[in-house]
Amino acid sequence: MTHSHILGTGAYAPSRILTNHDLEKIINTSDAWIVERTGIKQRHIAADGEVTSDMAVAAARKALEMAETTPAELDMIIVGTISPDMPMPSCAVFVQAKLGATRAFAFDLSAACAGSLYGLTIADQFIRSGRAKRVLVIGAELLSRLVDWEDRSSCVLFGDAAGAMVLGPTPDPERGLISTHLHSDGTAAGALMIPGGGSKHPQSEEVLAKRMNKIAMNGREVYKYATRALQDVILEALAANGLKPGAIDHVISHQANVRIVESVVDRLGIPREKCWLNIDRYGNTSSASLPISLDEANRAGRLKPGDLVAMMAIGAGMAWGSALLRW
Ligand code: ACO
Image (cartoon, rainbow, N blue to C red; front, side, top):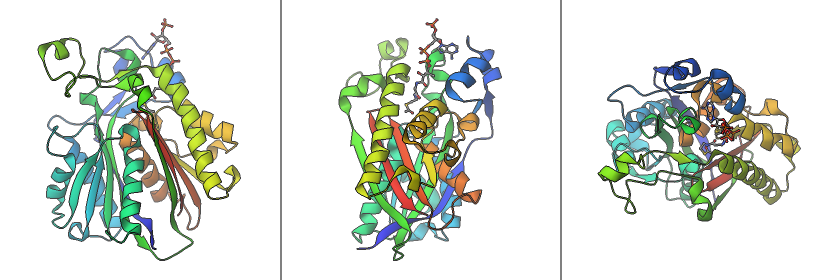
């Protein structure tokens, strides 16, 4: 059975930047508080009229170019997002149309910040089974339209961006995806949600008045859950492959908070220099953050052929996972 490899990566962030100092003028916060608690210094904000599929397409074009793949060669497009252009149809079909990926079937995946990792897993399975030869996995989020700009405990965290990966089969046993490990725990759903706008609380004046169509988060609960779950899922991936933390050359993580990532690698005994960190520039871009980090590390020449890359992500659900691959 052939396994898959990442053939190209791409990223896009809108040019408009909102710094912590800009936020100080809008809400009762400070640059010092945000940097100390999260590591975030600025975030990108989509332009008026820009939508999630626009950002997804911009990232996808770069990944396709690197993978030397045309849109018409794509068999499948997966977009991990909680902020699609509209509830129906999927963001992925707009991406398909804008790219002109006429042969591909396309769908969205709802796993919040773990969306790209879930997408990577599905892509890998389709490639391993021989059902697909070229798969585009995108994480794209326009969270600035979903945050409650009156809730200082959450609005300072998020940003808009997209990241993309093109996967294909590789016959090389020394390279490519080794394994992925996914988990969910719906009993913890209350820690992070957008409670309104779905079948439970359909759009209504009350939903709008109570701001139930915006992100509501218990930061402490998320923090505690995330650090434990990410540590466990990296250990699970290593154990499944008979490896120890010392074998990891690079950690490519979802960037929710610099303290979460550092606490996980510290506990695993992995040097912090092995983590690609960019949350200072983007904030938390949910499903986009993992492919953006991979793209930055890749384009910076950090990833050498054969290096062991450990990926980890966690988000609302809770939904989380890890992946191990040889670059
Ligand atoms: N500016 C200034 N003060 C603030 C702000 C702000 N933006 N937000 C909250 N505070 C205040 C609070 O009101 C509180 O004040 P009080 O002590 O007078 O009541 C104080 O700061 C401490 O608040 P806590 O919420 O206890 O602060 P904490 O140390 O837990 O940090 C944070 C909050 C940064 C949200 C942290 O809990 C965290 O990072 N959690 C993870 C959440 C996360 O990453 N979510 C992203 C989505 S999920 C994911 O991607 C994995």
